[in-house]
Image (cartoon, rainbow, N blue to C red; front, side, top):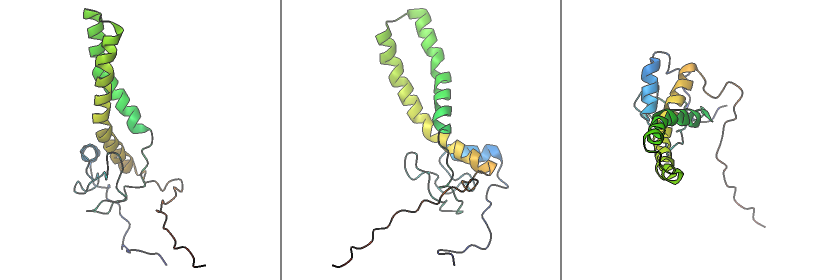
Length: 149
């Protein structure tokens, strides 16, 4: 017999949400299904389920896609500036490093969370919920009391 709350029907919250709306909700850090609950419980940690519609968000594994897309976007945003500065002023390499390394780090840090939210929304919209290949349910270990000797 299953433990916990029993729901009458399986949750299929993404059936009627347009893809653009879901991606925008995810990028804003909201539940892609309802737009009400929070998507993240930390900087990049996805909540187990939506507090409003109970959509199962925690089992969706975005893995390497958000960093890949973040680096791709940051490169397209900043590289034209790098090339223009090199073309017109030809500064020393240390000047490039002093300017562009922090700029890339800041832009990537600012983009990573919205990109991960959009990727999670995209995966949820495609129906990739983490159950496809028998993804294990992660349960926090409980501490057992020490036996009396």
